[in-house]
Length: 250
Ligand SMILES: NC(=O)c1ccc[n+]([C@@H]2O[C@H](COP(=O)([O-])OP(=O)(O)OC[C@H]3O[C@@H](n4cnc5c(N)ncnc54)[C@H](OP(=O)(O)O)[C@@H]3O)[C@@H](O)[C@H]2O)c1
Image (cartoon, rainbow, N blue to C red; front, side):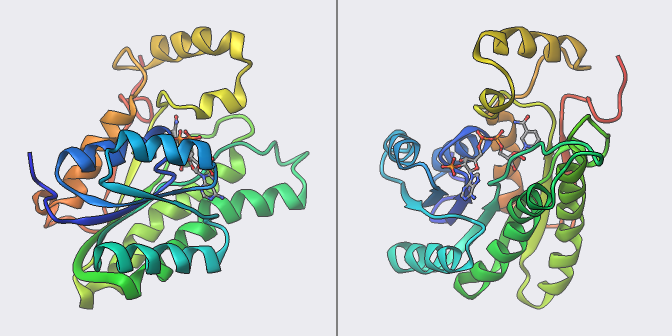
């Protein structure tokens, strides 16, 4: 398997969940590069599991100086970059009745502004003809309680795939977006008390049209497709990888 042989990739949030699933899939297809996050413990263990193909960089994606350093360091170590995955993000805030200005700003900074500047700061270090993959969410298409600001940020991320592709036509850099549905990641730990996690996952599986929740490997396979020449005619596109949950009813 070598769809990404000799490709250099940077995956933000590659130390956990969906981002780690993407890093594993990329590694299995021959890619090298960097995973980016803030938790040194999970960065180290993820890099160890990736067997030396990926270096771990501790950086905050909402900090533009950190982002600049991520791409500089990766290019110095591996050469020019072919694939960027802007995956780091997280959900919830509250309702329109109770969300503070600070919570609104933090949610938008993490899920929207960081994506814009991840791409901007990567560009000087990218090869022409590369691929950029953004990560949306089914919450961009359906309203879920307390996910309003997050959903709006992700809807804008989905638009960015078109806008960035247009901006980068002269460099033949394709930008596409993967929209996951409910996926089995450590993000659950942040919203659900530990003793309820299995019951919540079972509930989600029962309401998913396909009968199970997603796995990070489901998103990983799709990311390999978008990173590789197999998707060479796609730009500005959104791929729903959601088990049918966004538009089907059971
Ligand atoms: N799981 C789902 O059901 C689902 C569904 C739709 C969309 N998504 C989207 O998929 C993406 C990945 O989510 P996940 O479920 O895999 O969550 P996760 O397991 O909690 O992973 C989130 C990742 O983002 C990183 N991150 C968060 N804030 C960061 C910051 N300021 N700077 C650098 N890294 C940061 C985290 O690293 P550190 O903790 O080390 O900072 C972590 O690696 C997110 O964009 C999420 O919105 C998830």
